[in-house]
Image (cartoon, rainbow, N blue to C red):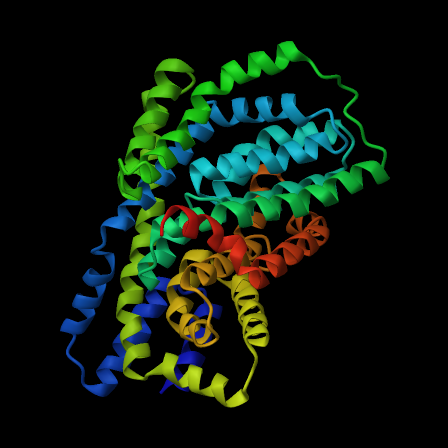
Length: 424
């Protein structure tokens, strides 16, 4: 049966059928074939989304939208540029650093590309980085947002694996920084090779002014992580708290956002959240097939028969997820493949939290991998460029991410240090 299901899934995917509908069609077809009551479909649809942690998804999406439209991202960029914009590769490093910080607020890769790209792309061109490099840098830097918490991808992984979301968030910090360092090393080398300098000097006045200006923006991650790890809030409550905080700052302090704009952001949040929830709900039905056919157990048995070492198993998992990321969005990939790949990783002795970070970093790379990487299409839309123009600038950054992925995969202590230290 699984062979027929796999073939049908590929055919439906090539026909452009939405992933949630593929899940439902295949599950209902398999259940009908085996004479299973359709009540199982209803139970599966409702059971998978009946989880409080999922309410954090619309919270963080809404907060990211408000911050992007409300002037918070612009102030963040100005502050980072004042601090590091004078060093070799300063504007490129500003892009990566701003993506790290904005990712720690929004949790959305596409929102990071959109929120930062409009400001940083002209600045990079002005300093002489070239269109190809600039497009590649912005498109790939946005992917950091799903590695740095609060990550929507991590929320879904926690739902599918019953992992601690608090531990996943802590585990994402150091790997996210490693990804940024690997990209930063290349950016500095590129700037030195092409003799690109900002021509600016350190200006204490500018640093003081931008620091004062960004103060309220930097309060957002304090609300999120201070609330969660201070024991005052759950991740879901933190997402709602930071949403309220972002509205107050954007409307009443910065005064760059109207209530009409907030209503538009609310509608966009509802649409994006609905897309996520319907995939999660449909996957609850599809998981019945995997359980009934004992697919994870069969995969573990097959891997066991090959007698692969843990190193080779992790390499195999990375290759599989990288290929998956080229064709599927992270939300669908997490929901479909976590139940399949986690038993294999567990068999190799991989910690659940470490596996979640490995999975997330692979899917971050998928965000800018042709042919269907979402960030590629976001960049094409924002900068009015062809997909070939965007893709041509991505290749050096694939190398930097591959180096970071290798470090993260085979150094579990990097991911587990903070969770083990702070959440024993």
